[in-house]
Length: 349
Length: 290
Image (cartoon, rainbow over all chains, first blue to last red; front, side, top):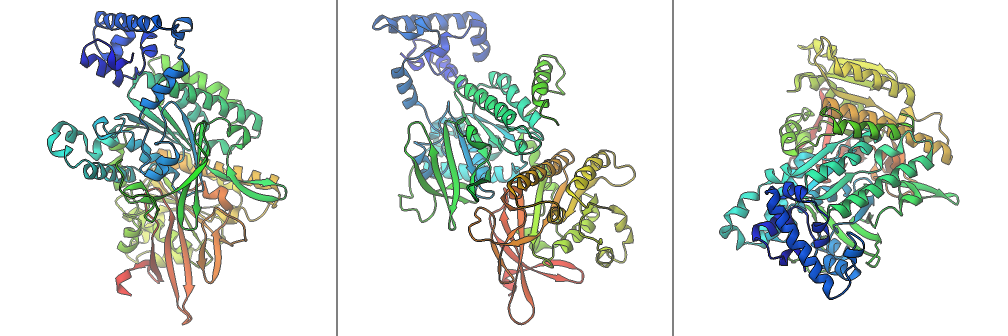
């Protein structure tokens, strides 16, 4: 049984989902006062919901020993699979890139995106911060974004431009929706897209660590955040660190924390990384920064590179998808498919 | 800034988050509220064609690099910006940190309008001879930016040029390259911090090097018949937000066609525009005028 099937008021069901309670296990782990606060309802109503949820959990346990009764919060692989299949992904703006990523950027996972300066890392980061906000009725997640800017490349006017591009594409793909849905129409303003990004500008690695520690509290208060973008995770860690072992420990601590947050709050974490030259066997080669042990820290790794005058994305690491590459373009509207890519251009977002 | 810091600071942040003092707790900003100031804070180049190329001018709170070979117009542009800053809506002073000696004072006077000799009062000049010089200058500048005194506030920092600071003292050995790039990131972090905290426009000029075969990842362009890249390699390229590349191609009749290329920028598409250097400054040329 899922949240959507619980025999409770429809408004409560919608609120539960909006507040980030995506599974029964997550719901039954919550306490009544906390649930009441999250849904802004009375405590006794929250107790009712929990009673129903516990009952539903029990009835599920009747036809097979449920793991959640043995180990609180645990899920079996079947539940996880169906949970994952029902989950929506965050559109990158390019259908080809979505394809190699298995539908887009995945929630509950940490994705690293690296590339040379100017290839479009920040553009993709901003695009994701906008696309995560596409309303549910238009096939998006309708969530909010946290953008942690360490380099100062988050240009508000560009964000506005990308939001405008996103809206014009939505209206193009859903022409019938925008005369009959005045409520949805109200939301589709670049201004509201901008206002739903929580933007942190940080100027040192101590601030970076502090913000990531603070995220735990912040995300607890803002359950509608569906993506956390750090642009870039690298910059402040490339100065002043003489002790590389310490740097590795600090960084893996950060990535572990982010991985936990992404699971706990059902959100995507995107870390942008820089490229450096590595000296191996007498020659210099391009590689992502922060060293070898860092490359184990992220679940997925997408490398952006130039192939002649075309931009390409290369999925370098993923637990479930094959290694693949695809072209993309950065246009005035944001990240889109490359114009002369062979695949079908017209595809619903 | 020693590596012991990360262990200490998070606990400090954690303890403050429980208290009511919100000064220590990181606060998210609303991008919508930043929009007007980021539009109004742009510094014009004093020419509508070049301003159109940069969609309004150089952005505040961000580091812009101007790269180009010698005599491509980098210093010209810097001098022009230094004189424009007090006249612009920002009405700001300018901090000009130079490493190429001597400071081109006569050219600066030549560019200043005869009616406004006082403009030179707003250009604060200091020389930096090494990376550590520059870092200490920037730390001192922090105080100046916070308490400008009688002067209009400093809203423009020019560094001309970053490459000549690194010409000496560094070998091509891996250890030296690592030391060098750590310095790049320190300088850049300092510049970006000043830019962010005081909403400054920061401009750094850079020289070019001939492209060695096999070196990938950096910006490449043709200039004066050479294939060149901005100096200091890909490590430095990671340190700037916007890169403008000034190139030149001789057309055989003795007059060079100069171009300003947007190599990369978070807010601009890659595009280019021709420009000329005249006695009274640097000016863009309308593409249709040719």
